[in-house]
Image (cartoon, rainbow, N blue to C red; front, side, top):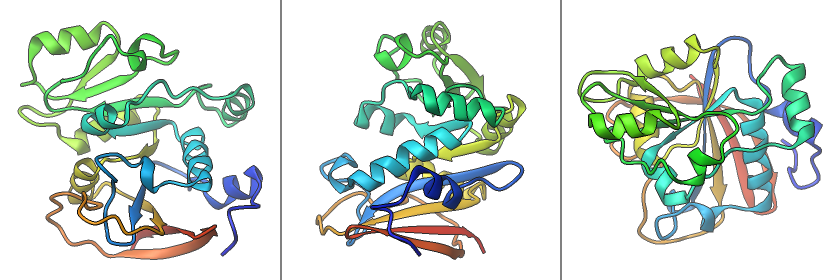
Length: 235
């Protein structure tokens, strides 16, 4: 265990380095009473150390996988990186910027937002064959649309499609519904779990609708101010 507050980028990059081979890690923050949001957004739970870690994890990943509901609620924009991060990624054989993949069953995404219009790396939209053709066509003008599943997104097929593009180091930021579905499909290799020192009352739990019990093994604990940063892997 070490304190994230004085940790250098090198310390963090070592602590959170990806293992060899394909890997899907989830990064989530939760309150002491089990809520993943405050008034519908995660911002009220975070800390400066958490934000530093978030951007580091994105820089280490090939692609960040996010549900459309979280994209809308959090107002995601392009995942830009600094010149130094781009150079470090290139030295590891990665693209200069991490990709962004969005899971959506309805294709209810606005193609005119900065997420699409200002992105230097074309986003990936993952949906299914039964999704609205008009919405799919509109998104295909600003993103790469991947079909995975017939009437609902098949996440195992979606992850295979990312791997086929060379995007094998996958970071998911949820939200809770997507995280639950990823666990149910047995696709999560690692859960990075940030415990925020707050009690917020009623809220959205870490996973919404998970059906399959899972046991994880605790591999590391770090501290940043009053926050705990926990690392779990498959048991």
